[in-house]
Amino acid sequence: MSCTGHNILSRISLECRECKRVYGTEFRYVCEECFGPLDVRYDDLPRLEPSLFEGRAQTYWRYRELLPIADATNIISIGAGMTPLHRAERLGEELGLKNLYIKNDSVNPTFSFKDRPAGVAVSKAREFGMSKVGCASTGNLASATAAHAAKGGMSCHVFAPSNIEMAKIAQALSYGANYIAVNGTYDDANRMAALAGDRQNIGVVNINMRSYYVEGSKTLAFEVAEQLGWNVPDHLVVPVGSGAMLNAICKGFEELQSASLLGDVSQMKVSAAQPHGCAPVVSAFKQGSQIVTPVEIPDTVAKSLAIGDPGDGRYVLRRLRQYGGTAEETSDEEILDAILLLARTEGIFTEPAGGVSIATLQKMIEDGRVDAGDTVVCYVTGNGLKATEAIMRVLKKPETVEADARAILAEVAS
Ligand SMILES: *Cc1c(COP(=O)(O)O)cnc(C)c1O
Ligand SMILES: [Zn+2]
Image (cartoon, rainbow, N blue to C red; front, side):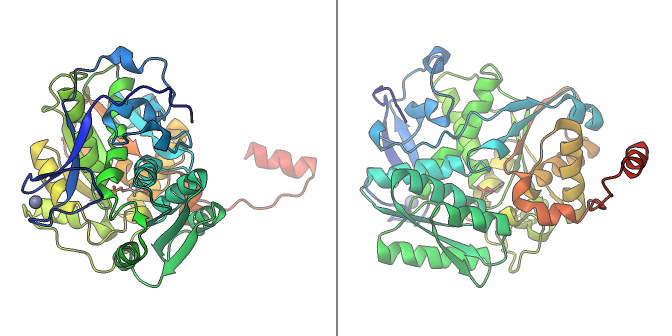
């Protein structure tokens, strides 16, 4: 990609999310003092003007001042980001909302939002001089990492539970990834990926590159803010697997406020959506607990969210408290119904994770947690074509009709 040689304005460092100890940007991913996760901090961030972004490429790299790549020649772009913020009038009318927006990340190059975190982490791995990358994946991250590795000419090793959707496996294999189907859950795949990363010097995007990985997901905040004319929405609904995305979106809004691109973001509400068969964060939230008890064997149609032991779960709980949001879980049936509702009102076809967001929003409206006039942004993070087996369960398989005028016209009339 041509990244017209603007210099990166701010210096970065790493800061422990727990004890706040600050580190330089050498390769490191947990705090030496307390084993807390490390977050990227932008030091001396100047005031940024909206006009800075005008005329830039329609990808998330347009926000490079707020992304952690020091040398722009290390950026590996497959053109992800700047997905539509879709004004959902028909769905809004159905649900009783006047200002509903869908952030439609199902149309990224690999068809999920994971192009954001994966692209930043793979680029940073290149900046660290690594030649191998990888990930632990519930399906979508495998393709996003593999596609960016392919574009960067790097090798890619993906670790995923063996029960994920066939379309996701076909996609990742096509990009040339070494696909390791682990006989176990996502948490098992995650442990195997951590081990391989340590022993083989692999930049595992969501483990040893996690500080940079989460930076990519922040662009889901940046784009929404820009697409709303640099205004703060009233309420966000975000699907939660590991919780990295929800936490990163909050960080993103806060950085826009620090850079004077947005006013006060503290009145915005942020809510979490999980599927019933894997809802450890929702359970903790409803019990008023600060501790997330892992779900041992997730069982849900929303495979992308089937993370029993979410790495950022406790930070999601903090964010929900900070932003006065709520958390809801939805059944497989509600998820599949919501997929069809979104498709039939707005022409957007999402995988079950997106159905979880929509179904959760429905529940929140029923419980009176959203006002009719609120500006609500619902994140739809993956594409329906990746999960057709599951969605077909609630659809009628078309019967074959003879290629005969009378038979065909009878079908059209019925
Ligand atoms: C990974 C994924 C999520 C969850 O993101 P986390 O950062 O793990 O919480 C949501 N939707 C889709 C489509 C995903 O692939
Ligand atoms: Zn620490």
